[in-house]
Image (cartoon, rainbow, N blue to C red):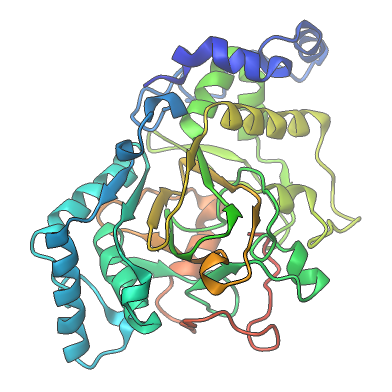
Length: 386
């Protein structure tokens, strides 16, 4: 599933990257630009992670539908776990036994880490569970995909509720509480990003993903100078604290991409401090190239209530379509997001990303499990952009 196979479509989608001769000449005129790839970076990534949207023409290509027998196992496992009298955050495969379904989930885990990099698990009906039990089901199924759970902010919140909130200007402009379309990005930490859809919007709100491997392959074939730009250690990230590091890494024969536009450019909710360096023209060009290629090769997923998404945060980019909530609770978009890591399948993390991973997954420290969105005075918006 090589991205290069979609060349004509991709070229038509973003002529400034692959077909604009004036831009190519401008690049060559810059003495700092060389057409060679960075040392050690391959000319092409030949992996299952290098896909385009056309590789998944049917919803069944990426969606695992729970059968009646699977759902019965989940119900039984929920009752078994509740009989232990333990807190819900302690659920794991041993205490939430899924004798048959568990093997299928472990195969999905391997696919998320080493295959195409994403999956949707469908079939849970949120209306058939209490909020507490639904969260337990989510954690129980999730534990077969990746068992380590990470904090998502400085407050130690383990569950992030993504809902539209226009109660304040700050909330309405924050990615987490905006209903606007957002650009492709990665989360700051977590090998796997997961979310449970408790309810969907009246209109819009599709999950949209793209392969960072495909982005790399297209750039390596058409603009290797931008690969060099992305691999340089001079990208001035403002969040979570100021640091200069690359956007892409070649680590243990795997490509890792990690960035967000708000951390590099700022936005209305997170204005970039004026004393920090701005991005160069070449860096802006590279960001725009990532967005253009990702949009040309993306997969759009129409989400249903009860869906559980699992995305390889190291190799898959994601964004959200804008949406409009309805007036009733069942027509208001509500996702519960988590950051995960697997001891068995987890990738080696570059040193520049290590502090964020360590802070998220360190066993010591505060962990809060809010089953519902908390008011701002109790659950303040963090300064991170996503």
